[in-house]
Image (cartoon, rainbow, N blue to C red; front, side):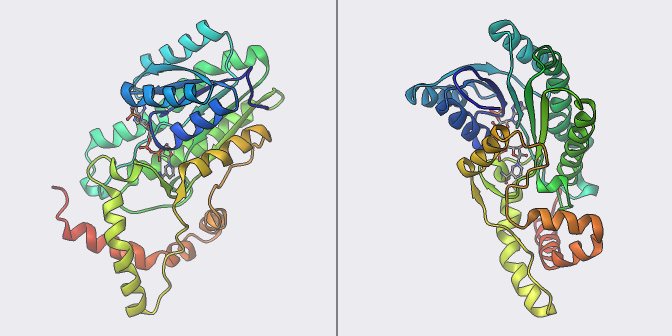
Length: 293
Ligand SMILES: NC(=O)c1ccc[n+]([C@@H]2O[C@H](COP(=O)([O-])OP(=O)(O)OC[C@H]3O[C@@H](n4cnc5c(N)ncnc54)[C@H](OP(=O)(O)O)[C@@H]3O)[C@@H](O)[C@H]2O)c1
């Protein structure tokens, strides 16, 4: 599907990071971009940048972990534009806690923003797209939706649920003109790692990665095959190219991560072994921080 002046593109989590980058890119291509998130000031900044580039947008302040807000978003788009070409379910949040330290409220809130929102928004958007027999639904999962990482089990489980949801959605879209694609990025340079619930998982990684190299040398094991941190505009380009190409296979944005996901399916122990030094370093760092606080 071509993104151009006739396109209406709805993006959740458009106030920062990857969502803002997708919004700026789609806006620069002429689309009308519907910007959804909770921080109105940050949404207005993105809207201003789109306007400066000659594009147009609409701001909808909404908490996508609330069903009524998701319904309001889709109803507003339907009433205003009478169509929706692309829905990018991008809003998401991670957590920092071992499984035994994870409070039930944290588990539920991570599922609400990462999973429930994708269900509510997609379910409400489908009748609009089905009427046109056209559209593209994107869900931003993660490599955490394909293989495990320590100290954010709620997030890992939630992103696995997103992968399953899109797989099921695709079976219901067979024979229609609507596409659905799951995107599985690894590290992107955004606020994500420092705004995780329960503390900064970014800080845990920053301390654990150098320590993991020492552990790897001491135990004569390999270092974790980490991919480079990707700028958000580069990741946005990959997503927009996937929409324009009508790509429906799952999109692994970072080199080497699809191979790790395949390895996790074929031989999970072998995959986990390759990350052993990092997981050991993260356990050591997590315990030394005395969690829960
Ligand atoms: N950064 C990475 O390394 C990475 C890797 C793989 C996958 N991802 C995924 O990529 C997506 C984008 O994250 P990012 O990296 O761009 O992080 P980010 O800069 O923290 O952006 C997250 C966005 O989600 C929005 N959001 C969070 N909770 C929300 C809620 N309850 N209602 C509405 N909007 C909400 C935030 O807006 P407000 O706070 O204004 O509501 C913000 O716009 C997420 O799904 C994330 O899990 C990120």
